[in-house]
Structures are given as structure tokens and as C-alpha cells.
Length: 293
Image (cartoon, rainbow, N blue to C red; front, side):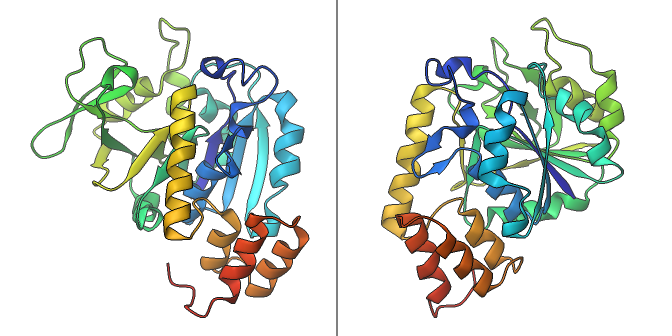
């Protein structure tokens, strides 16, 4: 399975923070926002990743993440010239997808939960498309999914004025390779965008769309507004300070998955400037507890 991070857009809801910087490069407490969706894909066992962003932001992403080889993965980049909707990512990524299944995550979405990555690996070989449902108090702000008593999908709506349920669709999706062809059938909405809900309805019409309710204790944060960005930073800070581990530490994830060795992790940490982040990496690699999650 391959992974796509959609990190384009103008981030207008975060103005003036995003006047000169891509929102996925803003900090969420102690790390750039892009680390969080990258960590989700890596925790799901995905090593081949495409980051789609604006052309003017490519040099900064490359400077921060490079080609991914230092953390045992492969990162390539593609340009989205203008924000045309989530489905545009599959048109841009057609050559990258080839005949593989693909996971798409939005660059401003943060997921956190015990064992979440391992659970997500389950969907790497499923047929069709798979999405998730997450209970929210403001479903009108999201794509909304309606489920029957068997948790089968009845309907999908994009930001409905009168939501039929409180289940939002988080920005993480799993698709088979047919997505690159089905994406070509999606027409722009009244907003002028290629809506992800339109693509999902195509899979639903073929009876190849399934959904899983994210369990209680799973945290999903959409950091697209000033308040939600601040809330996300506070959440990460509290968890890290109280539990003593870092969320979305991509070097640690790679090491625990066996993609880099202890020596590689130690040398990588030593190459970083003196900081809390460096101290954390050196501490975990020398702990005697072991590598178990």
C-alpha cells in the first residue's frame, strides 16, 4: 500500500498565519503539522508516500523531510497548482498509485489513539474503499455519513444544512487502485471542487464502500481553524508532558517498526541541534524497556 498526504490549499481560515507559509508547516506544539499525518501513514505500515503541495512550498517540505531515506521510507513530491478539491489528489497521483492500494490523509488532520496504526493496517488489503465515522457535535461542518443498525452505509452528504447523523467522515481514506479511474468521473460541485463525497458515492453505488466507527478514546483533530490549531497544540502538550512520550515522532516510529536500527536512530539524533527533541530520541533508544509499543 502507498500513501498520499494532501498538503496544498491556501489555509484561508488560518489567515493571517498562512499569509506566507503553508498551513501544514505551522507548528502543532513541538513539531510541524506535516509530521502528524506522516506519522499516521507510517504507523499503518506505509513506507512509500507522496506529498502533494503548492509549488512554492516544495523547497521547504524537501528541506524538512528530504526523500525520507533517513527514516527508512520513500517520500516523493507533486504539485497541486490550485485547490480543486480532495479528489484532485488522485488525478495528480495516478502514476504514483500504479496498481497499488492507496491511503489518502489530509495534511491538517491529526489522529491519535492506542494501537491506531496497527488497526489501520487491517484495511491495507480490503477491496473497494474504506472510510471512518467519528461522532462530532457539529456535523454540518463535515462530510456526514448515515449508518443503519448493521453499520452499513445508507447515505453520504457534504456539509449538509440538516445532518441526518452526528457521524463525520475524518480526513483518512483507503482505496483500491481503481480510485485513479473513478476520480476522473467526478464532476465539480457547486463550490467548484472535486468533492470526496462524490467519489465515495461512486464506490457506494458499486457496493464497494465500507465504514468503521472509530472507537472511543481515538482522537481526531482537524487543525484548519485558529481555535482547532490551538486546541491540537494543547492536546499534544498535555499528553506528552503527562505520559512522557512524543506524539508523531517519525524517527521513533521508524525505529520501533524496524525500519532503522538503534545505531541509525542514535546517529540521527546526534545530527540534530541540542533540543528537547534530540534528548528524547537519545533517551528512548537507550531505555532498557524494549521496543514494544
